[in-house]
Image (cartoon, rainbow, N blue to C red; front, top):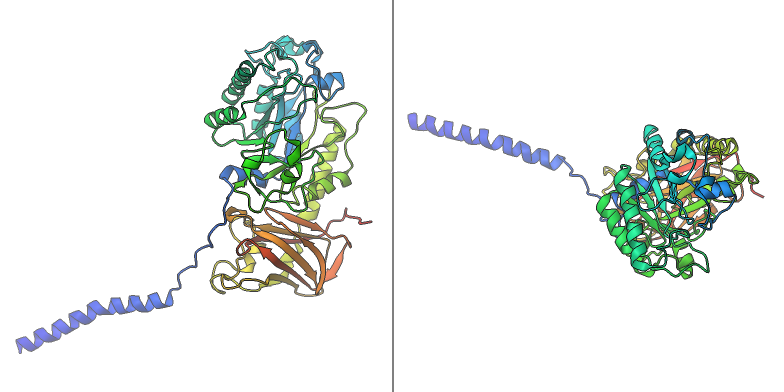
Length: 491
């Protein structure tokens, strides 16, 4: 009897041990593991490049000797005594930028005339010989401090071409001088988020070889999170013109080995980028709010319609807009420029704050991981425009589409916004947009942001279908918007 009881106890114990295992297996069958994101398509942006792209609009401040001589390119022979901004107030600059939603300002610490806005110990052609603050001022310091107080990041431009310094033209001497000034700026004024280099110089300028690679290495050593701008990057490339316009096709990818600073033969390549490019090097569109880069009493700011056109052809073509707003001889941004910049911000907010797509149902040609996955079309309507996105099934090789359908009465709009999940690479090569089956827009690249301002004006429809006709791998769309632009009056 004891032996029989022992057997019953043994069986009971085994059942108790097996029950949790069986239950676990049952639950495992019920648990569907998440589908991972698709593989990226190289090259990819860095963290600093992604943050830069999201700024959308930043500000350039051309200010110096030229402001007081009514010129664009100084000769280098100007006396520092002409630099005397009696009402200079960088806090007003920062306030103007902040009200316009701008998060980065770049100051011309030294322009081609060689005059330095800080008391460099390597030259006396600077504020130390000006009447401003009796030679005791440091404009770079005031600029950086004012920006920081308003939560705005600072950037600096240090012109390679120097028409004043006698070391220019002597390769080793001038490169030593330039590197010394770089060290002053990047060690004495806190964090700098963008450093600006260019190859601008006059046709008859002294021949000079710049040690750009040495300069870039020094910048990286001193500030690792900075973005370096030049014709050839290595972080941000020039768009190839000073109109503020990117190409209707604009890749953030390009071959860095094909680029060189000051090379006029590569302007078209800079403007469009390269789908086969080995480097992530997005384009920056630089343009001035006025006809000139420096302030001139005879000039006025561009009309709002002109600035909106620039916005659509820069930010709306996968680029960042660097808008120059030059302070006047008093040392303030002119009130007309302040007002125009505020108008631009209000206009952008008016157009894009409301997204009519949010009032629509949305479906797609397929979905990665099935309907229960994390890559559904609803991701295109959330607030994250980088890391949540619609991804089609890997099994779908063509005919990718997403469709928004008005729930009642239809919708009226004249702007369509599309954004890619560029953290996993730029992919879309060709796309088309249909409203109630009629094509209303087509384009090539999308990238961080593509804006289609409809040529026919306002359309009224029930369904909006976006077709991805051609892509590198599967397309990943992070955001879509249907907007109304009341300022758009097509001719």
